[in-house]
Image (tube, rainbow over all chains, first blue to last red; front, side):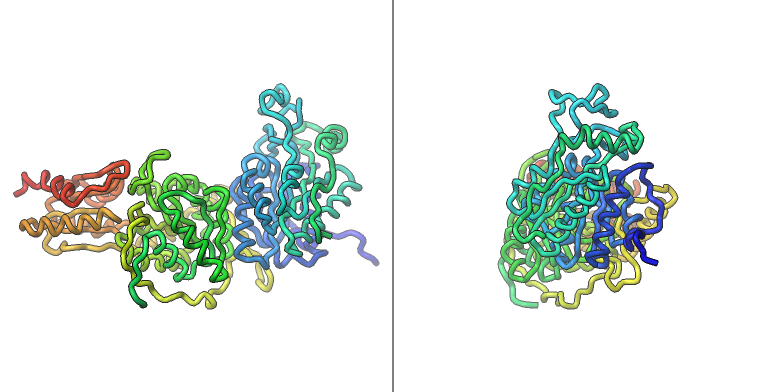
Length: 248
Length: 355
């Protein structure tokens, strides 16, 4: 018998706390598959955020710390600078990274910290009940933009990879999507390059993963994935925005 | 011990910290302590250690938190407004049981205040500052020599109890110069990564998770009980103070840091006039020398507390005295440092009825 599918070794046996249809499970699996394939699990420390993935350390079984809201990149900096031999990942949502933690994220990128950021963007604050985020689409209704996001009041969706790609010390910056098998395969390829950028000591790497939030979008998981294709990806295009020399 | 070196207080902090085995500094510029990061920035690279200027104090304390989670001897230094920004990190560090050292060269507040010496962050340092039930060990040196010596104790205590240690000085302590004799360099090659550190599991038979989160109230209560147990042990073992001419004293000044140094002169002025005045100088502001003050309340006619604030340590003195004797207060605000003559004159106002 040939094994064609199995649970990646770093994934624990604990049932997740995510809502049915939530793509965090997919993102976790991609991280875990690559840690196993690249033989990185035992040297990895993951900095978990405040948000839906606040309990992420229960589901991916590496050494882990739990950061204050938005501070993951600063905490990761402290760990990586004092222990360059550790493989340091931050796993953050869009509220955590693009709103409250944007300063820590930008300055980590400016300095070219040799860390990897997994940035899961579902366009709202999932854990707190679906409030507006910097990534919320124009016209999108959330619990704090009940009439739809109005750019005159709160501006436009924030494109983090496009911003960070302008910084010289970034090694690899990309945006992927978790809406379909094809895009998920591509997301893994992007994430592998991001991991490699750290392993080879090139610089700061980040992969945004466009995700859904069926619960707060008030949609079925399938309809939520369709919304990504129809409404989100036209605003947040998939692609590699920065591939520094030496990144494979 | 080596020879005496004439140095600025801020540089004494940095030099002593490096000798005590500090492997990493993260911080953000703020007056009146910029000579600390500047000194670190010159010296740490030569030692192969980490110096990093953060984008803000918020980032700096979270870098400290990250480094602390790896079991690395780590420090940040700042001054009052910067320390306010770090309070979130202090609270997380407290409930994560990780060690670090923080120096606050206090300046006048509230708000942007000024850059003159003050002691108005006593409450913030001693009573918490961040959210939740926690303590940090708070050490208040009063000379540069003591500052140089206590930096070693600060790192040792932080490691021993896996706790944040605050070295609370005022802007004057950072800016003045004095001859200082430093202790020998700690051999950092002997440092081992602690078993609890998050550096990747590698050969360990278990993985490490460092978090201040516990969503079940029963579990969080357990974490809190653990902290409270730790604090009880620290209160039992680590109280430090100095008494000056207290054996036959009828009155005592209570003071810490710079003002305690001036108070020693005041004690001598009083003794020259035949007044039996002594000094009680808490060196650890937390744990506070409550029992000592309780004991001394028996022999004294009154206490006279003096601080560079509106009366903050005063509350802890009063709690220890517990109404048995009067506790008077004299404070200067906004960065003004009183002379020994000022303090003595204020003290004597209270003594008239007693003599």
